[in-house]
Amino acid sequence: MTTRAGRPPTSRTAEDATVPAGRGKRAGRVARSAFRPRRFMTSLIAAVVLTAGGALTAIEVFSVMGGHPARIVPYGWFVHWAEHASWRSWQVLAICAAVALVGLWFVLAGLLPGRPRVVPLRGDDRDLAMAVTRGGLGKALVAVAEEVPGATQARVSLGRRRVRVSVHCPSHAVDAVKEQVRRAVQGKLEEIRPLTGYRVAVRARTRRV
Amino acid sequence: MDRHAARLNRVLLVLTGLLLIAAGGTGLAFGLGAFGHLRAHQPVLSRVTRHFAAVHAWYWPEIGAGAVVAAFIGIAWLLAQGRSDRIAGVVLDDGDGTGRTIVPAGTLATALQDDIQGLPGVRSARVRLTGKPSAPRLRLNVTYERRADLLELRRGLQDPALARLRGTLEVERLPTVVRLNLVTGDERRVVE
Image (cartoon, rainbow over all chains, first blue to last red; front, side):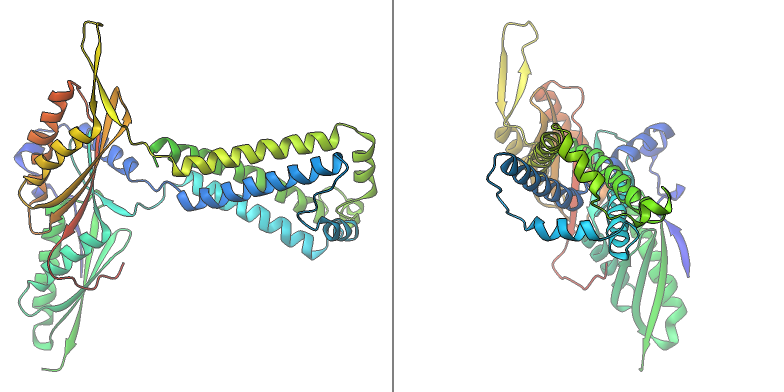
């Protein structure tokens, strides 16, 4: 049982209706951009490797040129290996493939927008970007689902575009409870107004009564 | 970390990634025979390469200089990760060019925090002023009662809270980013 929620026309208030469509879109773009991942961890790894690699190479090169090799890294064995390994040996091919793959990872991390850790909300003001934490949104939806008579022990899983709700309910009232839970969760999403239109899927876990 | 650092991250990641793809790709091309089978069978560090480095005096200094540049870029990149975009105060222009007033960010943040905490449903609020002293921005962390109306909170933030601050600072725009944490008394398991 799935349905779309998040941006139904019925949820628009009278105030929203007076807002030109372009303003809402621009506000949405601003909200999405404000909560885009900053690629902190990938950048940290890349920056540490770049700094360490650059510093070690510079120290080794200039210390050898000055006549007092620092030998912080044992590059003697690497030179020996590189003098004997051909370009088509599997070790060299594997290292080159790994380097290219890391490069691809960095390029994709830089170019792809990424999934925000919070859920951006719709609004009409581009100077006011709002988002709710995923945990907070999940708990709010759990509470709403558990308010439905007969539904207990609700669990909510927030996907990219889908909200999966799982509830315990008596076996004789599965269809009715599922429909009510779906409506309740959908209603709450319409109230919270996430920028992404979520689909609501409800699963009922029955127990012996 | 500010949005400038986010942009810097993405640009440097793409550039570093392209360099790594070029290096790895060239090695793979050598190994897979794109430059001839003879080249594929040669060692990675051939006599030709060693001879080239030996006869050109600029070779090792250039490698060293390149490494120093890479290390400096790396350090700058690392420092950017920890840089805060918080500002200490906001500059108010008197308009007639005779002088300017600096309002401490702490004072403004406390006033706005009090305003927001007065809105229905708000449990707590934390305000941070970022951007430039002449063009401030706001980052708000608001803990909000999940049963309360979010639309009402949005309206309350727009007017009076932010409108009052805009009036005080005499600025037309005050870009604000709000991170809401919906809370309640009882906690349930949520699978993310």
